Length: 191
Image 1: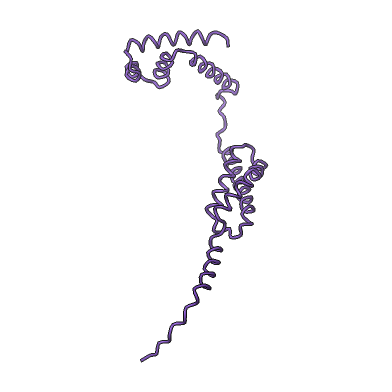
Image 2 (image 1 turned 45 degrees about the vertical axis):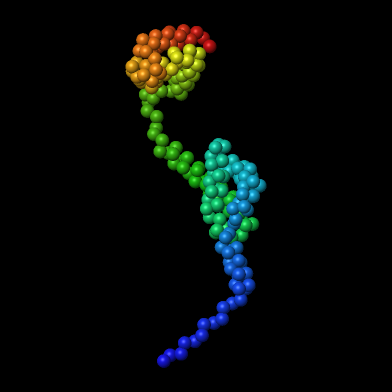
């Protein structure tokens, strides 16, 4: 019959716990608290870095926020908390490059304007007309504005407008015709 060797004695609990704690600290990586402190201390400088690489504020803010999200999700791999800022900076640079690549690719994929497309001046004129229409609409009575918006912008029938607003069909017609007349006057008078 084979002889079974006795199991080695267990290590004292104190040493085992100290060793486990050290391994946990290494495995834990950058803590959320450290990342929060880094955010508070370095957000503006990272935003400035992104601003040097990109041209609009919204993209810069998006890049910096995305960098913090990525570092947060990979914080166990950033074992040295002192390297968190360096990792964030590199992530901001990489994300900025990616944003620029996407923009360039988007510009390359844009279709070329057709010869019969409206010019920029026509687009600006249309925008001015829309702005003056919105301004004139704001000057109408509340019911007139509601009827016109539902009838012509929401493309509802007069019966649907009446049901939506809880008024009679005749009231819809009256508010609509008065509203159009008031709009016509407001649009013809110079601003």
